[in-house]
Amino acid sequence: MTNEYGPDLITLISDEGEEIEFEILDIIENDDEKFYVLYPYYESPEQSINDSGEYYIFEVINSDGEEELAEIEDEAKLLKIAAIFEERYNEEIYDEND
Image (cartoon, rainbow, N blue to C red; front, side):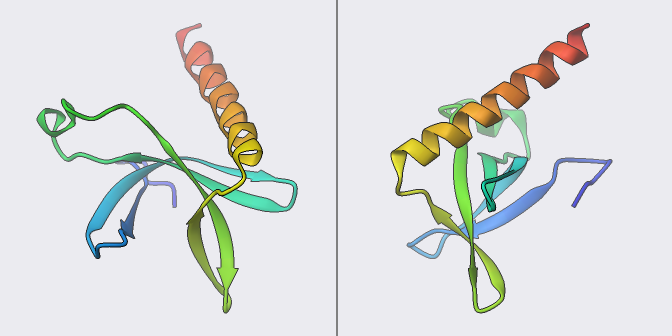
């Protein structure tokens, strides 16, 4: 999955059948569960100008031996995973600046 020349990307299909490309910011494993933290990917900086800056967290669910991403329904779980991601992200940013 690691791509030393560019971001790690994943394509999801919306409920309307639209393909949306995301950058994988992090993969978090917690309490025997796995989560993907994703951010919309834009090929050029001009495309990202109107982006809200929000990232998305999806839970990995195994369906017939295949991994699928699903929205997290439990708000407490979502907040917990978001806190883990933000802590990791901040640690990485501050380590780079030192």
